[in-house]
Amino acid sequence: MKRSININALTRPIIQTMQAYRSARLEFVESDREMILLDANENPFDTGLNRYPDPMQTKLKERLGIVKHVDPSNIFLGNGSDELISLMMVAFCEPKKDEVLLVPPTFGMYQVSANLNGVDTVEVPLIADFQLNVPEILARATDHTKLVFIPTPNNPTGNRFPMKDLKAIVEGFPGLVVIDEAYAEFSPGETAIDWLEDYHNVVVLQTFSKAQGLAGARVGMAFAHSEIITVLNKIKAPYNLNVLSQQAVFDRLDNADAVANEVQLMLKEKQVLVSEMQKLSYVKNIHPSDANFILIQVDDSQFRYNQLIEKGIVVRNPSNQYACENTLRISIGTATQNEALIAAFKTMDQ
Ligand SMILES: Cc1ncc(COP(=O)(O)O)c(C=O)c1O
Image 1 (spheres, rainbow, N blue to C red):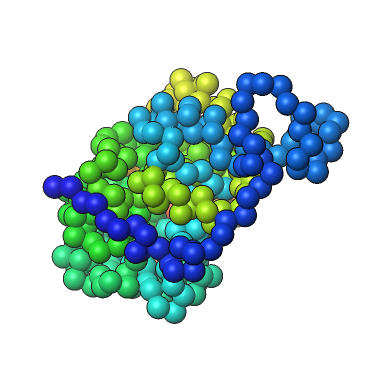
Image 2: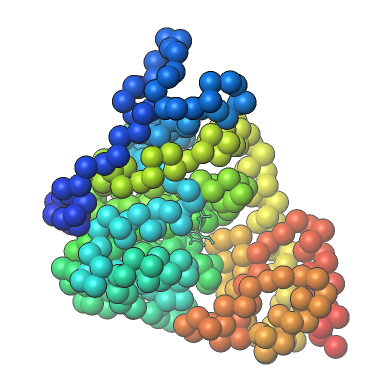
């Protein structure tokens, strides 16, 4: 099956008609010719950062296009996925009228972004084994349900959703399906990027914050139909990705072997951690993880959280989330960090 949709009709009317700001660096598209740049009121003395970044990140998108096997016109880059999530709401959701669908327990920023943008949320909780309730998601969606956000692997539960469930949603959902693959590198498999040609309602988010090791640089990627990318370009801040962050991404892409090696180390450490945690009497359940973190169920999560803090170890207590009572979410650290965690865990078992 294929699906093409009217992206213009999904876009908020105010955004369809608005004039985008044209930054100085957009008026003149850089070529290889040496030019005297007197167009942007910059300081002409070279500090390494005295020039604005390319607003369209043309070179970086060309490079990412090769890595991800997509055309650069299908890529949007932002200040972390957080910016992309917010821009999707600004572009497509009319405050107090439209809504987004969430599948709790889920990544917390979707709700925060919806609140900030005055957009209502509809929740269709996960069912047994933290799986998607596909029929309910499709049944609850109306013409005002402009977006559904699905992180896979999911945060905080750690599991990947079956591609067939995601496909069923993509085929039946009236709005845009945002598939957030922030942790994709930790369980290589099919990516929804491969669906972009056939399904124009798919938006895939990926990030440099997790496996790629650049959380401090704040670089998120959206892959989508070029008309969706055009809408996002229209509403973004002109220079939303700074020069240093773009350079950091180039450097990391040049070191793809190092990234792959780090991912392997983290996956190995995850196994060590799981087998050690299975021995602990107060760990009641270890949820299967396709990511670089593990969700465990314990006897008393606040008590165990506090014990770890006393020992100088910070984990996450997502117990206030749907179906996550008495859980802790633990990121996979280095071998040394994990040894410290395991040693701390063992002293807590007495
Ligand atoms: C599912 C998911 N998406 C997005 C993000 C945020 O990514 P970024 O650092 O690119 O804003 C996170 C961070 O925890 C996440 O868990």
